Image 1 (cartoon, rainbow, N blue to C red):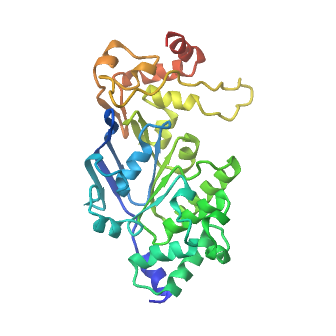
Image 2: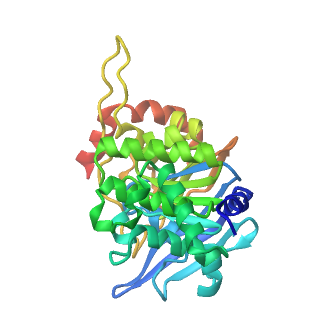
Image 3: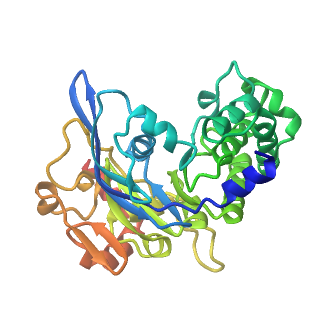
Length: 354
């Protein structure tokens, strides 16, 4: 098969649709079960971007590992993840090899740890291509050169090893590998972690440009809601292993229904408005609950300035406001809460009580 034939074959792949229903992941630890993810669900229509946001430890990366079949052996896993109608959760190793890179690909958050240090980067990309396509080494190498050009790396550096690349170059090499087979679904797990702000901006600009060019579907995992606002049509907010809010990005970030989403907004800097006082940065007091023994009610209740006794004893239902959903007992008071959440003293009182 020639390079032109390979490119035509890969370009014909459609963007994938992903539907996750009731995904729960429980790690077995020496201290007992740890409920890292519980009843997570979302849908990524073909050709769209979904942002999965939340603070560190909320379960975002665990969701990605479950979708890629990368959880430790013996981990409890329930639910469904339908990739174009096929359930990809709990597949055998042989079945996973057919799915990974070919139908769903991963950009990891640590490029140095995901690349094999004893093989050249070019050989690693070629191996991934030839594992799924009946092509010779020369054709696969030519495809790798095209992918390097796409991410802005010189083809001559394909012969080099991971330790010879800078952090930003390694991250771009991982992106090139993830795109090599034009998978219909791309999972980007905090792709700019550990990079400086300038390089973060360059990598995200590169991902956005490539996505627009190749028209793939993507789940972008990040704690940076500014990146999600610029990149994703849909946003899913996670807290302590559960989805607390989801919907169109403009609505979730512009008019949040859940107090946790309101708190996330306060923690990110905003451009000053002429003639108006600068918006202060407000942190959310407290810590995430211990998921080895989750609280009986809303998991955010211990840090929420609007929590009532009901929140501490009863799990909140998922309430819908059009396409937007939130797991909160008081979504009907969201406008009132948004006004109060913008005031530092609202959260300061919580900190004093803690």
